Image 1 (cartoon, rainbow, N blue to C red):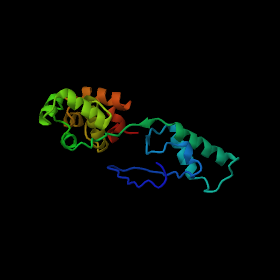
Image 2: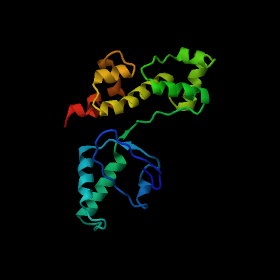
Image 3: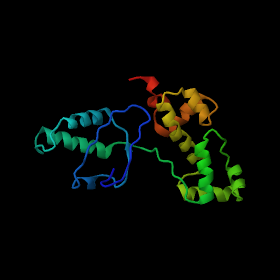
Length: 193
């Protein structure tokens, strides 16, 4: 997260959190926008180690090398895309907000186009222009991202799948893995350590 970025953190379950502050002169090596990163086992251990280091350390000694490696791991870490872009077009935003409120509903392009009094083709172009994603891709991404809090609460994969518009847990798990690269159980406390 860039310096001076106003933000808020909410956790729906118990979490352990550590914060690493990066000196402004080093920040130019990082993305200028907020990102969610996959924390590899190495990055996790480097963060834990960094917590025990003094605030002022010898740059050319072990502590400096640990911090250099930590910063390199952060810089090259895989970005997780949990972003669901919302349109600014008022009527389209209304439909998207209704979908977010009830992701189990059928999302049919033709039905949405009819509600907006436009052709499916026009809606497809509008959707892409407003969100940067195709209609189907946006609906899939929204369903998967919206399922994360329910999985973190410990709800069963069957329950979460049905709540988010999937007919069975295997279809949900396949789409989840395709979107996020891991099975739904990865985000569930039921899976255990």
